[in-house]
Length: 209
Ligand code: PRP
Ligand code: URA
Picture (cartoon, rainbow, N blue to C red):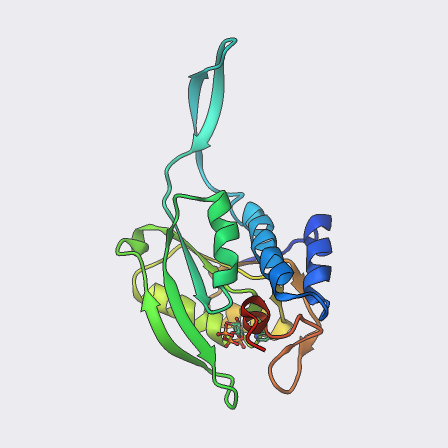
């Protein structure tokens, strides 16, 4: 069964408190999305494998550990997941980036696909799926379903705020996938929004409302 990691680091919680505040403007919200993504990524990549090497320092030889070359891909779920990409690439600049476009039908809350472009060798890579909000879990579950259909078998989900309903959906549909988030909130409201959450992440990142 996949694990759920709720990261209560003080820096993350401080940044999240500003993101939740409805008076925070687009510029700051966008910057914080990338920063929080970077901090969550730090934990989500803790199990990357390394190999031991030696390098010559100015003073002597040092045994060092470097990433052992396992390939990564970052797959944001459009639109809001785009806001996390720069933060992730800051830490793993050589990752390839795929995109899955999904929006939630406002009536059914079910995900509607409108775009999918993935690295050709995505099935050979460990994939980090990025979306700030895990609400009903429909979007994340569908995106991960596409990736599995393309042969991906090592997948992690990174979000900023999760709802218990979304976590449960992920457990049912993709029990093999670990989830990393900065907070798990109380519940969803009747419109499928996370309460208290931070509102519509896409609108707040792109200033569309
Ligand atoms: C938001 C969010 C997730 C989805 C979460 O996207 O970014 O993708 O809702 O909800 P779920 O867990 O119930 O599927 P939205 O559909 O609003 O599209 P947007 O990113 O284009 O704004
Ligand atoms: N999508 C969002 O952007 N926010 C929510 O609270 C739920 C889904």
